[in-house]
Amino acid sequence: MQPKNRTYGVLIADVVESRSHSHLRSSLNEKLRIASIAHLDDKLIRVPYAVTAGDEFQTIAPRVDSIPKLILELRRRLQPLQLRIGIGIGTIQGTIRPPVNRIAGQAFESARAAIHETKETRKYPILTAFRSQNPEFDQVANLVYGLHDTLLLQITAKQWETIATYLIKDRVDYTAKALSIDISTASRNLKRGYFWQIERTAVIMETVLRQAFL
Image (tube, rainbow, N blue to C red; front, side, top):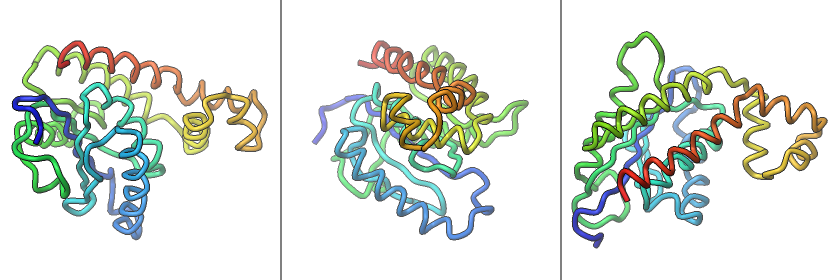
């Protein structure tokens, strides 16, 4: 059983324009099965991903400051699917164990409110939203990720391929070799795909989350 009143991060996500993807459920289940193995091993999640309704799935982060890396990892692994992600930060009731959809608490309620926020009609699209009991944090996090998502929406499939490979290889020359392209092409794809800004966002938000909740 988890310590009383400990703060957790709950992630609820779904697929944008899911009806345009054929055989989505089977593809999503397989991608999440592979992601669950990797993310449990890397201690990015506490329980395996569970598809809970249609194209929606949930999980729990063991530490709130692991959430930015988890978001980027999910976006990488689930390409070409585009995700809406709601993150709720708060307490959880009872013992944390699979299946995740049988767990409840403040963090789940906040995550549900956050993903609902991504679906509201606005002047600009939102793919990522945070909700917690700390309004000041929510304001900063949602501003940062609102700008982050504006860049995210402009990344091409080829640029995502380079980003995904770089996140595994961790060097531009290794990335170029893996993709059989020139180093200059790999570097250009990362730059034009806003990878360095996206990576920096994750690093800074880890610090912001740590300072706000840990």
